[in-house]
Image (cartoon, rainbow over all chains, first blue to last red):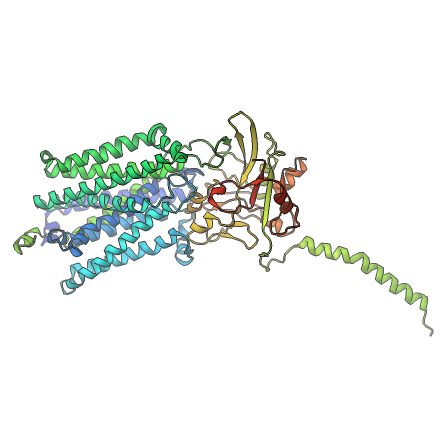
Length: 396
Length: 241
């Protein structure tokens, strides 16, 4: 059994990794404690950049949590045996990422101790309030999904529960995109295009995370992923990366067509300092074009290049989110068209933002939570894919 | 014993005189006392503010200082400090410089109220948009949604709070239109300060009352809502923009 293999082969490495993950989580919790004691003054966030690094991390983790379940969906809903073998691992990664993202989001609140207020007072015109149901519902559905996947007596329920989970996470990611799509005030947001964009991002980033986690799992048990399975998953990742790129291009091109958005686009794509740099170099070149080449070109068909492509996709994801969330707020609010405006509240000029150590530590702490849950889940449960069994059954 | 009619008449007249003397005082006391705390804000009223930019002086910040003092704000101008009202300087392409106060516009359709997950951002029946400090979780979604940058997040522990204006680290806050004064039939501190400076650039009143001075001014002169394209129906209007 895989768990037996994991258990017997490398207990020291396992505990070392638990200690590493635990240290990262503790650092994140300490950062949250400092933020709560001293206030958000210890962060780089201010009254103009109200959402900072914690949101970049939290939204990445939540969007990827939805997408990582794709692997299970392709198995359960669309019946691909190679993906079915990976469904439980995909489920545990989904829960892990969701827990990490939500913890960061919660601990960044000005009053995190009032989370019970958020659970008892709902304003149903708020997309945030919907998302609280969507996130908790997602965790519950995935828990049930994992159960029916892993308990053989209930295996026949895996398809209907898988379909429910698939539908739920499409709604969940639409909800995450809508957090921004429903904001009319700022030029970066307020477009329905953000809903399909977030869906595509979830597919790409979730699969990238899965490929990285799968490499780690394969290395730990000394059983590499079969080449055809890895290549198929790599090609799927390339397709998702290309889809995100297309939708990002559509977002900017439509904006460029509207005269009132021209200054904003010039800021984000050309003149905005760190934002165009991150967008072009890290997201477009390193995070999209290079992975596409690595995944599609036959010369790079090794496991190492697939892993590199997945890691670059994740780096590109962080760059894209940074530009979208922080760059989107940095551009001044357009209140008085035709006037040059100034004030003590930084009206009319680009807002400055420098991420501080506590907020970065909090975000990284969320990644640590996801890492710990995935690590312990993979050890306790029998999650490594049984590709040999799939091959023996002659499935496609 | 005979009745002293003259004395009885004198007592009656004295009582009537005392009544006439006291009645207006009692009425005024009632007025000054305002709405009893348990009574809801009246839905028939919509409080609003008209800013006359022709009267607003570029180098004057009396409204800002009055707001800081009234509400116990630090008066700091760092981007992490609470600024419920700020002076914005506008320069048109010909180089003409003008100034206006910018604060919560008390929208009839407030985006901050729509997006608040807990309902902490709310609009009173009389149109004043407020934050309930007991249910604000500090998520800052309202600040993302506000087209006017009117809200501030309390980044640090607060000291020197005013009894009428509770504040707290980790919550979002903004102009309350001096709701604590309005409920006692007083005008907002900024309006009072502007008048005291002799500028009278701010006019406060009931937008729902066609006879009020603010309604009559809005009916007769051209006024503007900032970001009118968003159809938020703001209660703060600008004349001469």
